[in-house]
Length: 169
Image (cartoon, rainbow, N blue to C red; front, side, top):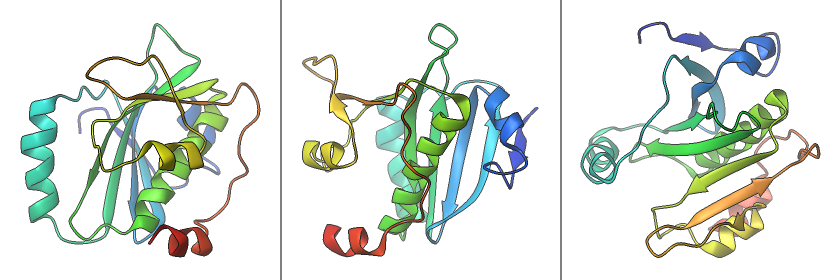
């Protein structure tokens, strides 16, 4: 990617670079954080991309991989937007969960007040969002908007909990 930077230790030595980057992709494989790729421009997701490109990627790509795109909007620098999640057909729940926990850690490093999300996938229930600390936000007719508020109180960094994985099945 043009002008992109890959951080293989984003939560350690490269945390300062991560704090400066406004747009990124969290990559997880087999339940572990692989890298965070900083992008020079924001990810703009559309219904067409989700339904056409995302579905084809998911069906044709083998392996346990999850890509989570996030943006830090210029108008709202204290917030992160979870823009898009792309998974391969063999993606495990552990990889998906690790990507979300890493996003919480990115919010902590950037000192963000909250993370916002517009959930298009109806298979992700409101109950699951609530269990992971997300609340409904700005109800609209065609959107399911959620917010995860921090305001200086961030969850502890932990590995994916195996009991939680078993309970989700």
